[in-house]
View 1 (tube, rainbow, N blue to C red):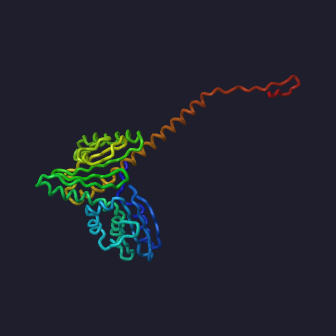
View 2 (spheres, rainbow, N blue to C red):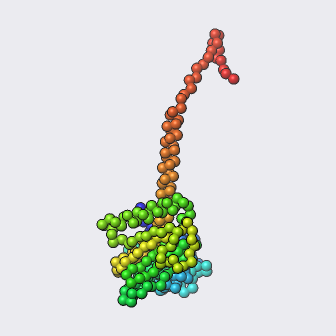
Length: 303
């Protein structure tokens, strides 16, 4: 299966090109989960403004998103974002790193703007889990409504951090494919080589116990996927960063592969239909046509 990358490819490609040859730009584009971006040069071509609009911004700010963006981007973060956007970065191409490796790392960090903003509730939950080990209490439930009818719920506990995805399956076939994929997560964890992977649980329609007290919509097209993260999954900074990058994209990863599987099945069905048509065409009997002539040699034509 294909793993989706956490960085935005358009940001990465555009900034890499502009660092080599600065020019005016004004690009609007959309990432996963309806996140809107804009790359523009409002004043001069060596200064690019990168702006992002995400529907759960107010919730992310409550969980410390501004502190994370300040830590990652420092002076690049504008105090006042561009109109109709939640956050903006001012990138001065003339002050960008010149070494190839440093420049690539700089561009990659900018392309991870969405990932870094969404990391706020996870980082807060990881820190909260360490403080709860002594008290034994349960942490507060963090809800991130990043899509119209879907959300991510994060809750810290003394020995774990629970992450719950609510996802909508628009079609009956999507629910079937999703169940097959999620069952594969459960079965794969039984292998000795990946028994340290997070535990994955799936519930259809009925929400898990951690969020059952919320007023959630009860519908057949809703499913809930629970990840149980243990301290080994965020033991240090690098491991925690990798865990956050992967788990953020789970919903997109799941639906992406559902659509790919349906497209593959449709292509195989069309191929089989074409093969059956060839067999039927070969089975047709050819009608023998013979010319009938008169005694004088003229050909008879039927009308």
